[in-house]
Length: 98
Image (cartoon, rainbow, N blue to C red):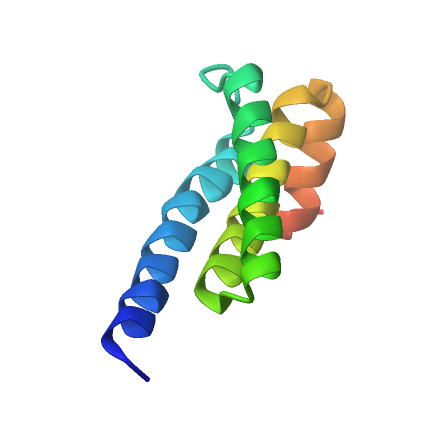
């Protein structure tokens, strides 16, 4: 593995782990009031486009990172848009509370 690829994989780990705390916080607190649905919509679109770019170029660090970040972002956006009751039900299932 060359240095550039190693840097790409390290960047992937940093990017992917940056979304995990936000997703977990939403599961635990059920609070999405401070999250901008518009910003997350653009973020989701950006990750989808970066994933497509990575696929076209066959760049695995780009594909892996942006696919995982896309999934986290879709989850965060969905939790932001869901009605409170549904959000609570999803969070309960994911946290093992029900």
